[in-house]
Length: 167
Image 1 (cartoon, rainbow, N blue to C red):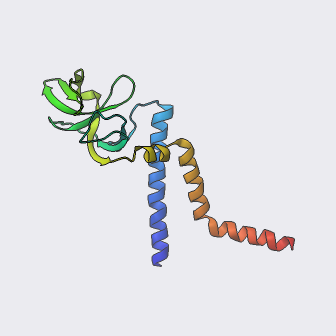
Image 2 (image 1 turned 180 degrees about the horizontal axis):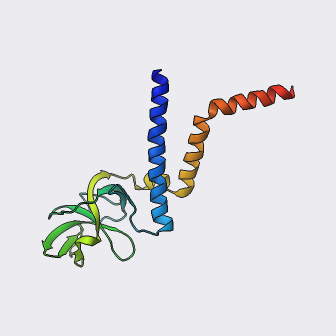
């Protein structure tokens, strides 16, 4: 009984994560969004040392969208080519000034609507692993492996019947 409940719970969690992954892939590759989000949460990558020592390069972060940002918040925001993750230095009416902790010069002003979210979780030195895991090929292989794992009893039963039938 407990095993059945745990299996069902695992399946529900897996389906939820799978659907979130599909949503991110759809946003990234079909809608071509720079910074896909699910329920306000997004994944970002600090690829340079501009936020050192608070956040080193090759670090993954999770952000959460908000209506209010404060001086000192580390935020991900829309920039020319890729999302940028820097600290809020000042807020003046409609303009927000950000700057990387290791940078000597502030960034050009941005609008609140350009901010994807506030950094709420940092995964030091995990950017490469997370980039690998969210790669569409990797996600497809994980999904295929998961389906095979879930259906393993049926697959082995089918194989036994076929092997037994040929002897």
